[in-house]
Amino acid sequence: MAELDYYQILGVHKNATPDEIKKAYRKLAQKYHPDKAKGDKQAAEEQFKKISEAYAVLSNPEKRREYDLYGSRSFKARFSQEDIFRGFDFSDLFDLGLSEGIFSRLFGGLGGGSGRGGRTRGFSQFGPDMFKTGTTRPPVKGEDLQVEVPVTLHEIAFGTEKLISFTRNGQVERVTVKIPPGTLPGKRLRVAEKGRPSPYGGPPGDLYVKLKEVEHPVFKREGSDLYVDRRIRFSEAALGTKVTVPTLDGKTMSLKVPPGTASHTKMRLKNYGLPNAQGKGRGDQYVRIIVEVPTTLTKKQKALLEELAKEGL
Image (cartoon, rainbow, N blue to C red; front, side, top):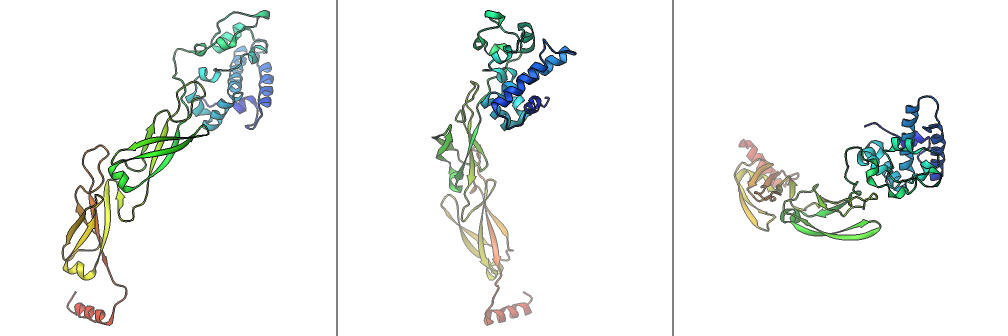
């Protein structure tokens, strides 16, 4: 898709006023007037279409805002020629003395009769069919909105409902959003037609609710798996011990730590992680055993360790 810079086509800067845009357009329209231009008539017609398209967009505050927001290429992908010229005041073209035959060839043809002086009348009657070229694009929908919502690990695991407040068209609105169990952070939940209204008669945009995880003081999450750390002493790692660990379900589990367990060994509690968002199975919970090495020793502890060292430990 060709890149068109409407400001460059009209020769105006991006902060140009409506009057400056109109003045630039009329000057160029006289230069490339298809009925008056000298030389290559076809080239003049093509240029006239370009400057008229640029003027149709930049003279409309809403379309100009969309063009500035999305850029040339994205704007042309979102808006058909029908969308661009919808609501355009064609009297700006006829005031240039453009003949109906040229107008019809350039802009897809007009129905209706002629008023006094041969000028086509009733511009408002020419609806969406005026610019159809064999394909019909659906009406352009409004702009989507997005809000970020904090969720706790418990809410992620078991699901919840959130009352969401957001601003639309300068008004604060509220909507209740259901968050299914296992819906992981980063996921966007769609609320249909709660975005901005379309300025061109299409459906409203959508509201997207993006989930942001609140850090848990005990559990760490990796995908659907949960991790919790348990610290044991060096002697417990060597001789073996038991540790108790909580689960997100509210249970307390007792785990046997075998003698000789190395630091950062992971012990698995199967199916105690987060539920799968598709409703099948759960992740696991892992207990990481952290062996603490003392940084300070009493005289007795040092003496005992020295004895153990002599025994090859």
